[in-house]
Image (cartoon, rainbow, N blue to C red; front, side):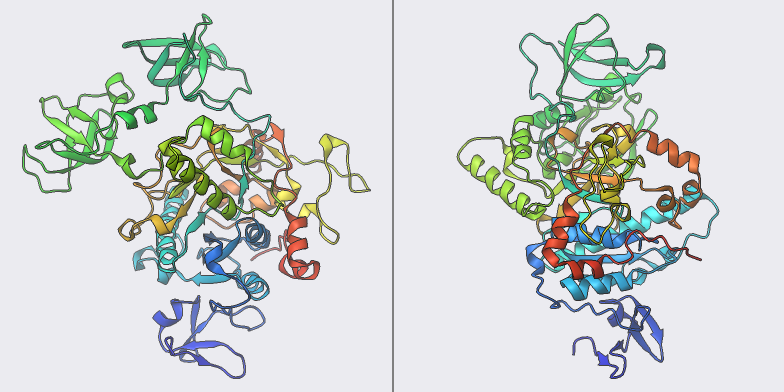
Length: 575
């Protein structure tokens, strides 16, 4: 057949005559003169044919996953996303530093649920010079090595899913779970679309934290055409200063923080005026700006030439703040340039009003609606609203790159009583009979950081509709894992208050945190570092995600669920 596949009659192991044919579908090893599919500990081949089970792969979501010693948490991650997305196709690769391999787990989910799985060896997607483990003692070098591997992998993975005619692809790690971002009482304030009557607007603003004035600092920007500095204070639990909110300064005078990105997008030119060179990929080093220049009518450099443009700016100064894609700028020699309008292909900014309405429609985890159902419904509602002349252009499209804020869950726990319940902060066990909360990170940990706090939860993650991404955008490596595609993912971090979905990011127990043999192993063995990281993730709690396991057991059956989730949370010692 197409793979020149030979079935070994005794073992049922797939054999191939070349490495390339084997690695196109399997994680392969050379043995007995043939390339053969990797096997589980019992010697069974990891069968990955597309038609296993009753899985309609086109009616679900896909995921790209890079793992490293993740076997204790992988069953939970797969089961949760199988139910909630629903996850139907997975491409996975194993870090060469990993001391364990997930073949047995993947085989269970493939055989029991029909999950379509491709296990990629590094030869499938990495050039020779990037293969193998990091051999440096420099933690930063090894971290960069890991990130490059990840960035090349996710682009190759998305490209493969596009070839397979898939749509939405999830790009998260095994300690991250996508959740419906329902409205709650402890949410950050929904951004206002414009200033209330009588409140002045500050544009091109920046917040500068200042320890000399407690929890506050300085916000400076332009009000009524004049550059202005205001001293402001915050309370410990206040959300960070962000666009769309009214702020009071130390004199109790109010002012409104403009959404500068949306403002500049609305003012942007979508192409260069005739005879004006175009600048792409700007990069700043101190007061110097470096770009790639196109249509250079001044010095006739070749298109794509990387070169400096003398602007005389200082990082953060008033002039530099007005720098935005789609604008015209003038250098110190009086030469005019057009800055490429990157946001042309970005998802449009969704207004606070539209976001609030969409979030009120969100279901709870453990109900019958999936992430895929919500995406289709919201796209249909937005398109219909826009077609009738209502809503905003932003509401007419979700994606193709949908950013999701992360929310860090720490290690603080609630203690059960002997009967499985507790009065401690309303804790109630949500594990079905035969299962235990402590084996599942999503059931065990309820306490999280302040919503919208970048200091605790850092950058978000994305889900990308590859069917709407052109092929030429899926090459090379991702910009980074948080914003994989320059021209299709927004540059500005997503606001928690306007996001349809969020990503629960679990710190987990110290045993789990220190388990991986990755580029940050030295830091992972530092218990003081672990405790410091978790200290900011005990501000509030919720049970949003915890009902999922009962629904999963109800959906697939108790016995099958026990098979699929066997050894979940079992951190066996690795050599």
